[in-house]
Length: 328
Image (cartoon, rainbow, N blue to C red; front, side):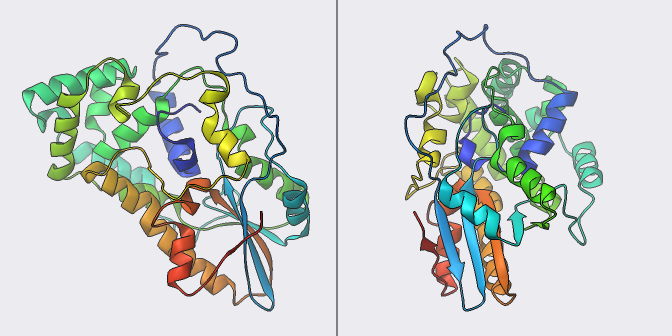
């Protein structure tokens, strides 16, 4: 699935829900057919995605940063990772269709109620902002009435994920899908870290006047030339290996000190960071701390963006007095 947002930032649940919505109100193609080499890539290196180990005397938890959507043929497995996959007892991912979560919320019902009872975004914007809002939605290929009724963050997320219509990436080739298939074939358990519906609802609930004010300002400042430029003023179309730079860095094991989810440092960016990164990484660190009380070997596979930045999972573990060892 294509995106104007960092592909290391997209949670499986976010993509699944956005994909479900886009299936009902598809985004139109935004450009002519891409040249044959637009999405070509070469991998003249041996993949070695970042791995960490958190362990005590009777428990070992391996942690792998992942990318949830990849193009066919993109190599990411190393001999070290294959050995770990073969040895562990269990796979733990953010959210899995193969693992029920006790007490999961009714997201569909809550979402429908939210949409039915909110004032359309355009009616909360300034006249100029409302005009640019319509332009942004139409440039992204979406249905104006549908997007205008969506909670702000969910609407922006859908447009951001819509991205480049020709991108061949798919969850079919994403790390979690491949790992789940392998663990299912070997009859080993798969567990979800969280109720993905609750995570998504935390985003849907963010619909404040502060967010509207920032959206209004960003719309007015947007040059209007492309949807990508709304999300990133420095956005440029890339091709070939430059287009896949995030994937190449990830496959080489590059871990950045900083992480930007793609919405800046205003109210919108803070809301996304709080709901998609800070809160979740805090909860996951607590889960890992408690999991050390149960013997065995586990592979934790979550988006690579969760291992970067000042609220990363690694930082949250250190705050609990736990140090994860980088293995490669």
